[in-house]
Length: 306
Image 1 (cartoon, rainbow, N blue to C red):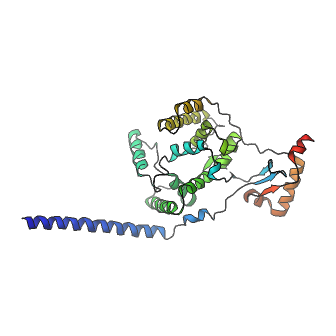
Image 2: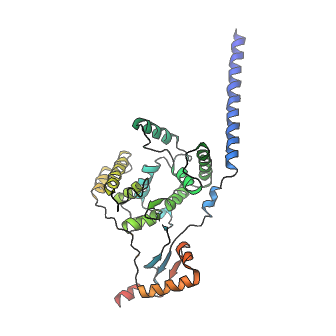
Image 3: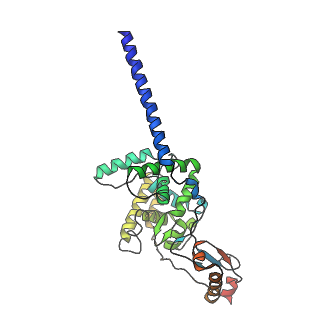
């Protein structure tokens, strides 16, 4: 009897061991099959990024004019983004960003439960890394093949880059509406200030734009909904102890002043001469996409005094 029990236990052990090995082998084959034709995440470093040309005065302290194309984008480093914005973004989009390996299992389960509770899709489980991969290399179609490719590329992205690098990629690419891409251009477009100077309330408002920039535009008919979502996000930040109660109250009391993007033109006759010279030398498309920094001979402080 004991011998039969021992054989049974041994058989069960071998069965589960072989099943586990078969599962690993199958997943590996699936990984290789889907990965062989995928773009490599290192192309983030090689991709041409569209940036505007800026015309400065001789000191470099004044931007006299900015030459944009269809996209307004200003690439900046993570260190030049307000901590307020980073905190708001992580709470809204990927609270466990610095702790997961690209796929947030807890986040997926939490989102699934929220969707079941509401009876409709109210939350997604995609991490910032997944969103970055999807917007760069893949489509938004909801198929098994696309989702598998997304997961594989996400693992590769996390393996090759640090969390800060991934977050910086994301912040310089994510769309905010108004043909604006990246947090720096969004900050200038909506608040006429650099991203490093964003307040907590301004940061929460910009992050709240991300799910639907056109619908929630502060210049459209749903500005009140944007403010409501901003307050919901601030409450969530306080619940998670990301901000204090006093910071929450101060941010809610702040009156947001949205300023539509205005491409200021200083010393117009001089700047238009420079612009014409550059267009003749490099071409209009080149100026709108290659991110030139043009330092001119004019001293703008002296020009104003004159």
